[in-house]
Image (tube, rainbow over all chains, first blue to last red; front, side):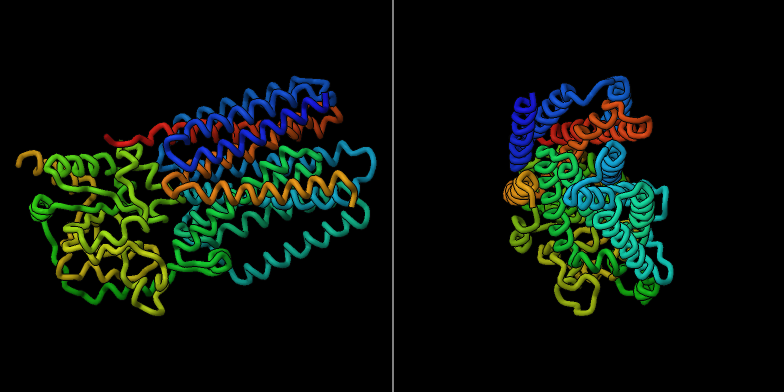
Length: 457
Length: 94
């Protein structure tokens, strides 16, 4: 039986890898996800035959409750709430790893060998940090907690002290006597640490944090795999750990931050920054009519959506506008910045939901050279990701961040509520350019008016 | 180091490399589904949870196992379903 189990686990691991590989194209992605799910199913079924299992009551109860909760959540959650959904699912994964670690400790009849106790400590620590950290990230994204960074004096010192204490306890557990109180202490301190690490991180940095927590949940699973000497856990954990790390890295690059800076530094919170806008500069405010005339005359348009679009729930009407323009033979494309939205790739999902075909969505590097040959760049609810200060203003928090070259288009139309700066607090030069038409107001209302006008023409 | 541990370590390190290779090819277009899909895969701890919940060792480890099964199942079922829901929406234009 053990051979069969292990072969089944191997098949599951292969299906996970094939599943992730399927995600390299939108054509094969759905099949890929299905393969991974089948892999999971095989792994679960074969585990049920494990000779250690004597009672199925609690397994069945757990699976029924968990499936119902997961399915209802997955079915009804709005796409805008995807970041917090991933955060909380992730937290549950990390929490499960930590709990299995503790349960294993209770089941041990002899003192664990050194490798088991090391991975037990690591899995427990990373798992609990993932659990409570994800809960905080969820609460922030869901608006249950304030999105703004919560800071207090000596916060980082406290974190370091707690981490050091945990490591000392961990070493004592491994080299000294592995006792229950040490396990409980690591669990408790890990929980506190997870909260403390995430509360000082602001809303704008959440994409990085979710990616990192994603990676942690993988690491926790892999560590639990070492404790149970179960290879499918080790392989899956390693895959997810690598995936989270890649995304964390990409997000940091796209936001011009390094990881240490995200975790320990704060950006975009200085209140003084907003005063800079008070020095009134001339902007040309335009009506939706003006914007429509300009769009009508264009032969190429690039739409730049930002999170403000999703907040206004204007994705559908935006695409209706795009289709009206396409009907007139205008070349319309969408330019997607890597951090448009609240998590990696979020904007693509939001637009896909509004029936925008994915071949109209261009990633930054694929379209950035085309702005200079484009008649109109239509910006809806984006700000920092088009701010030229990233290119030329040394000392700006944005300096060095890759941006969409919106300012190189012949005309720029910006739909925005006000001149308020984005998360960075940096004023945006584009708003004051002569070729820029600012159309103030709620994105959904403005776009609805524009579509109405286009339909009349 | 003992033999089985060494083999596990080999597997762990090699799997990380496979992960990097496979995932760096995923386009930014699909990064959100990638994250939620990978997330669902990390729910593989359900395997460990099942054994903890079913081994009937002691009341406390069964209880911990039960909670772990619930958590991991939410992660797995919710993760795969929400990923499928997202991927279903990605359609090509004419």
